[in-house]
Image (cartoon, rainbow, N blue to C red; front, side, top):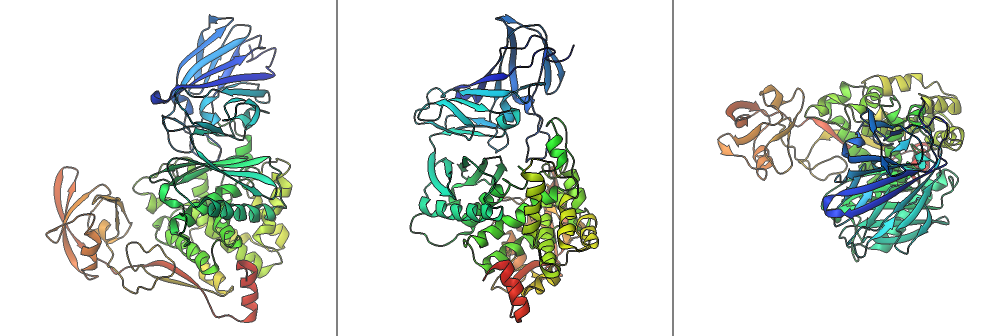
Length: 598
């Protein structure tokens, strides 16, 4: 017998209760009033925008089913699906353990509650296009809590708790919910209501932050002709001691950031931390177009059960990463030299990763399901970061188009929006490359072969030079030198390893470097260098005091065994980029101004 054989429900109703935040438990009730036959229910295995099968069903427990008040047998079909036989109205009840403070799942404690619908709501098979209604109860004992979501409100109280609706299942799981005694800061972008929602203890110069966000959102909407139309947009932000991340949704984003990221009243400088937060917001907002609406056909076709492979993930994340900082410049939040510093930091990250010479960008995109979200100690040597290299490929493509044609990458993105995003059509593999070639009239085959399907170095210096930007590879000047401008000319000798933060345990060993040649491995605990104790505080000082070419005795624990080796420090490699505005002729100055502004 087919699932929901005779009658599909026109409305599926849920109730969400958080009766015991201390237990980190959401209690869910699902009601189907109309089905006359067996029903199959499924929970997603992954969430759009985060390409790893996370098996949300593993957090579900206490599942029960009833028809007309009578318990029904539940037949498990696979890890995310089950079947309930019988006839008549059906009620499900179950609990979800919610203790994942990331932006991808669900979280509940006495401080705040949060969930993505993909973690909570089973979907009746065949009813994906039904209307879904959700009543979200106020958690017990949570005075001062409010609820924020972009779900359509039907009947809610002044704090936002009550009844919401979604036009289909996709919409139901694409509007996350934040509930807490949060701070809300409203601002307008081109007539659309926006708000920054901050859960957690934080002090900030709110007018400055919302003004900066408004400018960033405006220039992004301006690029796409003020489309799509939105009723509202929310930046749902969990503020913690130390954190960073975001996940895009169709009219909101879920963010996690650090308490120190925000500027305080009277502090006019643009700190690195605040700039990073604005870049995160810019990145997730650009996903309104690139991913949420301009999206790979394989992603759009997926029922979120198994992996949905694409070799174009560099387009969806890398291109977005290129634009996130560029929009900070276009919004006048940063100036051109600061923007070039950000480009240099990205180029430095790629340069310092031996993986760039091992894995192509297309392969990195395809293999994200087993690599990017599950890094290990060898990832730096084996797995290319498609965010970082993808952003640099987008940069190279934009500069190539500007140099050799009458279009820019902006034009390519607008064409993708018109052809695929606005009508809701999935982009075929290679869609961005095809449109770039079509609009420009250029033969870009060799460019994309090099950038996507080879491990050859990118032509950064050559292309940037044509726009009056001097690109220089130099040695790192200090352990905290991430690239960009520096006044220091000192160079530390190189050990070819990275320690865990606040520890002397080795986090990574760089392929072909001194540490690997000395037989050291990730996880080894360094205790002494040349007979003197090593601590997290003095490790860099000890290296700085030595000369390149010096052979030092290094004592370490490998597991429980105390070992010794000799490490020969090498000269610092030329792995750090500096990008600066150069003296230029009129032709290159005109190009540079068209790209970076006046």
